[in-house]
View 1 (cartoon, helix red, strand yellow):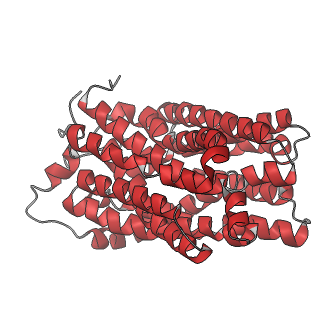
View 2 (tube, rainbow, N blue to C red):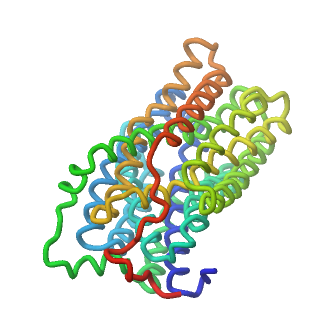
View 3 (cartoon, rainbow, N blue to C red):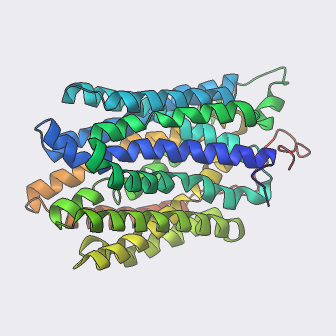
Length: 409
């Protein structure tokens, strides 16, 4: 097993923390949505555009920083990402108006959009092939880990420092750059490719694989509706629709993120044996069993059980994504392809929060239970079918020739 003190272990730890802290900064928005609404005397539907803008702008960041990662290396690009998303998060806490706040959330989205793709390619190119499944689950667990951390910090800090103070805490991840600079080596796969006399343009590579790019974007659109459709408005659903107490709400949020971490690691580890497509499809279909308790709970306990099961399966499917996308990626564009297709899927699913909130306001008297259930259930079926019918390349060689090895353990 990869030890934390080993070189590949340090890469995995840095990239996991980078995605965890990125997700922490993102979910502070969801967890303080109602407070921001009151601060700017607005509505939930209007303020939820902050989430939409962040998700939409991530596609730009994925392309810009992905191309940088393919040109100048994964390591310096990752460091730039971490610094930028930390600075924009801090600035969001100082926003004097709703307009400036929305602008800063858009800029945060650009920086956030580059982090995942760069970190996942650096990780997958730096570890032994037999660890791709489990490490994929661990890396993607950074997302619910960030949500869990944000849930705990907001439960403790929101009554004390308010929503602005929570956003300002988002500057702390910038300190991770010091660890990356000292302990994380450049991707050996990227370094080896720099010795080639003839280099292929990333844009030309993506154009040559246009069919694969379109398929991956479609798959990641379904994935992002699956994730954001079960997370972005759930805290607001618990507090505004169900009128759960502050303590009960955060207990549910913490429990569901523990489940998400476990589900991602478990299903990704299984994918190393049963295949990426099969693991994703099974997890997506099993999520349907959680719908009644999750969207129509009768008590905080019922909501807790439903949320636990839902996120166990949702993030169980997501845990396979880092390995699956990097294995499908053309090697010459691995810094760009995973992040770009992921974030373009995010762009197409960016309206989820506004869609669910708008459906609730127009057709269900402001209640979110049916909009949550319809989106979650529908995309679970679509995702399972789409992935089952798509390609898989679990034995993809991360290197330009069979003898090439990742960072030694």
